[in-house]
Length: 636
Image 1 (tube, rainbow, N blue to C red):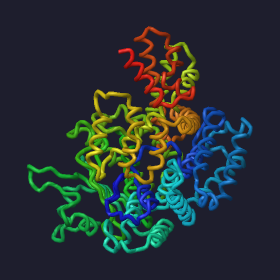
Image 2 (cartoon, helix red, strand yellow):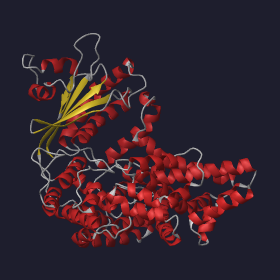
Image 3 (cartoon, rainbow, N blue to C red):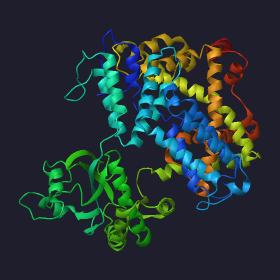
Image 4 (tube, rainbow, N blue to C red):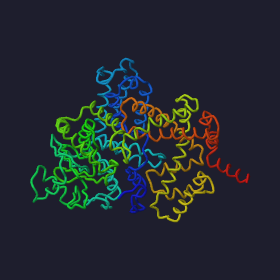
């Protein structure tokens, strides 16, 4: 099984480093990238074209400028092969978007549903054409070629592979593939060679170029379209039996035992037996002292489609019934415990979700469960019938999503649950509010406070990334256990003998000798060396300054979108969350610091550290801290 820093120890001396880099680039557990894949930002613009409303949407220059900045950033990291593949539709889309953003204010103020002017429809059509090209087999193959080229180019010193891998992942997802599974399989194929038995062990004698060609064929092949049925197992009580359209609710306590050949007949019995015959899925109690894993089942027939995201699509359909029902009549959301997918009648992907994670803090809320059951019985059939005819229309889906978010804070199932997407979305406006409060404390305008805080981002980002680089070196999987243990003890020591910057400067070669992440090696080396190389530091600061400019524009757009009900996809929100939390955290820390010191908050917000000032004047970090340490020693 592939893990980030050590795919396996099977690599021979003849295996090239670029192949190891390519394999490790499929690892998906890195921190969230701030650069949006081209597909994500184009889809975000489409959502704004359809749903964003009022003067706080398109008429506001900051929002238009932010969307354009994000688009330019995403285009800037597209590889040459894909750039050539989508050049025509991309140029048309950019030109039509510029015509819209530079258009008359009266047009930009038009609300959703009335945007029929050609300046609007041209952008929508161009965006859909571009997305269609990006979703095509040829574009997926081009992204693959770009990813291989980046891995082969060992002169690169950044994380150039990351935006390309992120885009390829999103292309695969949009095309209907199981992107997570595909990336795992590609890593196995390239690292171990193809195998008829599956990974991790394949045919090691298969030439590398043949593996690359096979991987490209997989990436650029359209997914299979077949009959897909999803079974969902929920925990909850007193739910009715209901069948309408393509959705059926069933009592698990009766249907699962009767799914056995000798049991009573019922619709879809053969399907359920396919799932439960091995006593792995959807087990129910047979004795009074046992607990069932599920209490009721929901069958969702997705028709002829691809398997990718099938469970999510089925859950979305059921949630439409649940959300409308609970909004109208009250109740609690049942806990989704398990799901299974049938592909052409055969068991496909399935999953356990653990015991009641994310559920209400009152798992025995019989009254709430009863309310939900009555609500589903009242509203479910008509909704299910409508969903079997067509998907929920865009505006109604958006309205339901917003209403559900508005209902949730005061709902019965708020207690003791994991953060939802709605919770994470709330971070952005709340972080904005923190900064505004601190700005008021400092007698500054909010924009002035945001500007002062934003100036801190490049240097703080640099220091944080240096620490991340150290952590990636110390992750493990090395045969140099003694050196790894020594460096780990020194790095995590509660009372270090010198500043951490000097640890990095003094042990940089030892750290790099432990590094197992080939796709990140060049970036890690660049970060570690930057503590002693002022030119490398300045290059990075330039990159982080540009990044901060884009993030600040995106943060403002997302904050306004969340406040005024305009589109803000979760991927975009997540990409700016760290930056928003940095601003609010820094503001609160500096505000409290001014209070403790009895100093004017405006002065503290404008202050810079000695390290920052020294590096701005041309001194590298290691030299600064060596001078500081010497002064401390002399003073003692």
